[in-house]
Figure 1 (cartoon, rainbow over the protein chains, first blue to last red):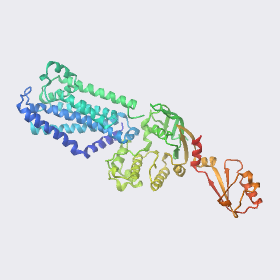
Figure 2 (cartoon, rainbow over the protein chains, first blue to last red; figure 1 turned 60 degrees about the vertical axis):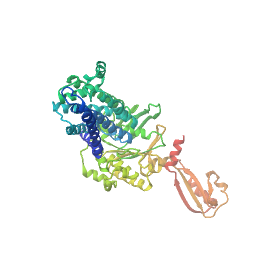
Figure 3 (cartoon, each protein chain N blue to C red; figure 1 turned 30 degrees about the vertical axis):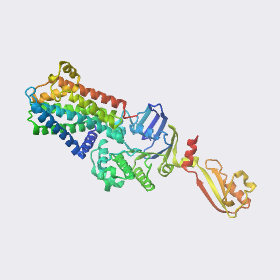
Figure 4 (tube, rainbow over the protein chains, first blue to last red; figure 1 turned 90 degrees about the vertical axis):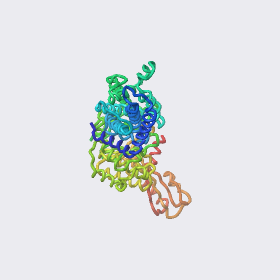
Length: 253
Length: 306
């Protein structure tokens, strides 16, 4: 195991984050604050509590998920796409580094960044609404697993993308709609029966539900399903990544 | 002695169907400077990329320092430093950080003293905290070299190291290469500047259209293949070449004051002795003699033309 290489990639990527610290953190915090003002205070004050939780507090896990998912995909995809774009990818590819080590370095750094942003948003939410966390360790566990699995997805997208448009396509066209439709701002029990069934095909429902359970001890689907969903999704991403490295897809000619 | 790099029957056909390398065999010896000379698109970069692991071979085998580059990639790649043709650097990062990054990537623990030594050798120490985007093109090339040297490689690949570099920097680069060779590093460089190969290489490999046409000791190549010209300056100009000298195929120039004789150093007899005695028999007095050897360029053009 080339530990020095993992460290080198990880800290090099983290340095990129620190160089752009303000925009990395301020923009998610501001957009979350806006959600709290609009949904939590303005609209939420006229809404009934959902399963005994005030609406403002109810949306906290969903909001964190929204940001964390988009950030994980964006950070990880950019992290590997940028070296491809400027050509510096030649270095990790010609170094005595295994594919596993490359992935740990890049995905680890991306996941770290989105994990920290998730915690910052959680801290921000305390300023707006009273939030209780029923299972703090599970909460951190879900957050970490989500960051990791979606950073894996982002890594795949970064390798697949041929230009910056494609890079933005997946977060804006797939992740954001799925999060919005995945019960971030409502409980799926509020939907008509048909949509309740349809929504179960949205993988993000399981993430949001499990994450919300760690806060309020209530969930749309059983927690075990949520865990299985995250693991299945991660294994899927890992399989795709190992195929990428095996075939050299868009990395080697 | 075993070669430090041994390439056997290497083939590469790209997905587009383009055959970039056609059964290349090449042995590179420890401590030498080998220049791969060839026109654009000859397969120089493909060959280097394959040895370094950036491109997968279609067929054939590459052994570096006794290790197969695919099954033993860690050991093989640890020996190699690569300076790519394109300047590819993280624009916002500081010089010293990218060099330290490269060292870590190759599995070495941090060594501030060694990194400082490299940066000083390449005159980059004063710029160590400058973001790369603020450096000149020549400085960026030096950063690429510093990165390639950061893990103390035994073999250094320089893919067109002086393309688009001004004359002064090119000479600097050659000095750097000379120092590296003195420290025992094997150097493989590609170039299409013949003067570069001529100036610094020990051996020259000529590659064209995906095949190696010739690998030869540079001096030997030039001695073996070199055509020499003998210039004979005459005391008094003549109007025509005397008929007695017709068999030498001389050319008259400079208003009749210079004769040019072309001879092959490979030939059993160069004919110089006979020419000189025949000249004096014809009553011509010589003022000066001069010879010139054909450059690598002439040899190269001859080979690639066929």
